Length: 482
Image: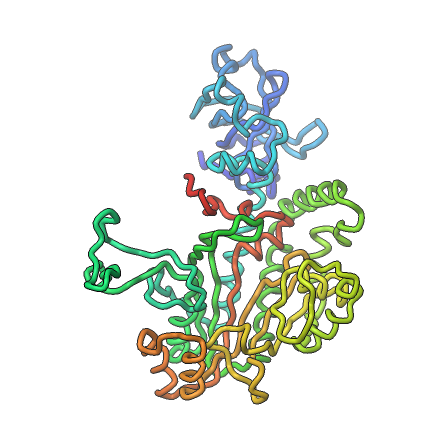
């Protein structure tokens, strides 16, 4: 007998009404020795199993507890009770996995509320809770939609290196990769570590970005995107930072900055609309959770719209496009800045914007997603195209409510001589990136791209507030559990 997922059964139960079927899952609750709430992870909704305890031996009934895993054969019938449309009258129950009942009491599997911090401590079990089941089903849908969008738009998926000798951002906060015995590392005559004896014959790191390698692929394939793990050794314990995270980075030959902004807006709207269309039950659950969470905040800090409403508005509204120079004027003249309410006051043109400034522009001034462009060259990366004014680069950041920057990108500097000069200004070793410079020698073209952190987007779509709660096993300072 073919096993059905609970999601399929609830969506199309009329096909099997009054037929026997097989379902398998975990017990979420067992009431009155009669009603089992069964869940198999395919949906946030439980399936009610009705047990006539007189038809089953007492030992089997005693073993059915929260978190037990069961295989059940029974008849699908329309439910007479409130709370569900359909239920199964159990005819055969097989216990696939018992639980250690005494140990169960100290886990998050007990049907009571736990803090998100407690859930993080038991990350191996949190997939079984409603909150994290919803979050990770949505994370899957976001990932699928990303691949779908690029495939539909004739992009090629490229796997760029995880181990690299290049620092794309020039930030230096990278995890080193070595095959050395750390207690006996070879040294040069000058007393430096001799990386020429290491596995790769040079100093290597875990990547912070696949962009530079992605650009080389775009110079032959036209449109490419990367989607893979990236790493940053930033000793930060905030709700916005991870040491290991996933990045999506498209690169498009012949695109300029305006084309890049159009691509970013179309891309974000497509992915969010996909989630709205395909994750209705999970979003409704998270929307209610979001509403309850807002009630616990001071009125001035509460969101103006619900989770689903926020997502619908992002899809419906055209993103406001604003130059960095205009944004600085707005911030300089804002009441928040004049009254000293910003933690980081805006004093002059050239200031690197913080999250509080980005959110002010999005949430209070424009009340819509914002794209900032043409940033001062000093605060952006070496590879961004220098504008004709000699002061700014063709950079762009997409800002979202509650998040701040969600996408960062630019038109790339395609001129060999200008790129070489910028690398010198930024202290980037031209010999290490000889291959990157080479792409500007042989048929260089205008091209552009951006980076999106998957976890930032999932954070926005789910309404969660800590980035550690949207990745299965977060990697943060002093924490590499699981």
